[in-house]
Amino acid sequence: MATIAFIGLGNMGNPMAANLVKAGHTVNGFDLVTENLETAAKNGVTVMASAHAAVNKADVVVTMLPAGRHVLAVYRDIAPKAAKGALFIDSSTIDVDSAKQAHAIATEHGLLSIDAPVSGGVGGAQAGTLTFMAGGSKDAFAKAEPILEPMAGRIVHCGEDGAGQAAKICNNMILGISMIAVGEAFVLAEKLGLSHQALFDVASTSSGQCWSLTSYCPVPGPVPASPANRDYKPGFAAGLMLKDLRLSQEAAQSAGAATPLGAEATQLYALFNAMGHEGTDFSGIINFLRGQTEAKK
Image 1: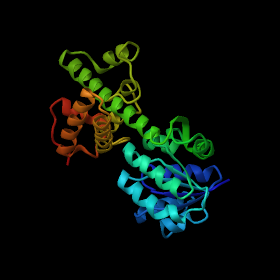
Image 2: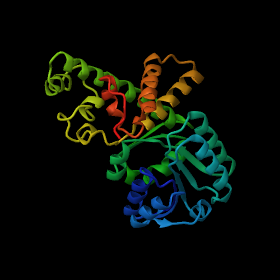
Image 3: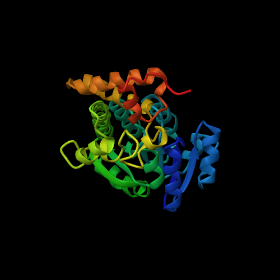
Image 4: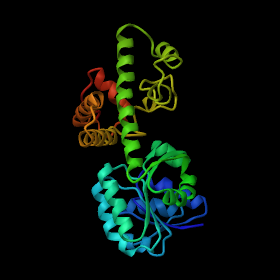
């Protein structure tokens, strides 16, 4: 079993760390938010006073942080303190350039590293069924895979440094676009007098089938587990979707790729967020498509 430093114990990081504890690893955790540390302690994580303290003598360092600038700041701070040959796993969703810079920092200090963003949301983190999209060397991935397994339903090695982030950005651009398409279809069906269940029964077994429809249907009823049945309480918040779509557009601009639907989805989610819906599940954009603009008080 490994000694793991886990830095970033928020909504995703805490259940991920808890699953590592359940698997028998020693997990030393740090977060800037006291409440997050209290939750982690209840989950069996050993709470540390600083990131430096967490990293001391750790075999593996896992980070789950908000943005690239946070990841780079933490890497610059802790990499010099880490044991030579330790493995750094960054599961944050960040831009590809920052991911590559993080790898470079790790390499400079004699560390192995992978970028390993996740898909599956808080529910997947709690259940240990996340999909990890990993970028990095074959040696780093081989060392990381058994660490990721207690948190994962699937682990995919996508390529070299930054490839995990590239895969995550592309995947979530598909997700954002497809949710808008599904929402538009249900809004049109309502106008045409077609019931939600009728459209679902047809589209879910026909060429319109997609994850946004069959697993995360944006209207109440057809998929009981979807946030639409809980007044759009977030599994994946609209603010996070906007972050990922903006990353996709930054990457598209950098790579010279044409993504017109991705650009339009970004604009629609930007409007949705600007109207106060950043804490709403991203599937709640169907209400914006219906013409509802104000967030509930």
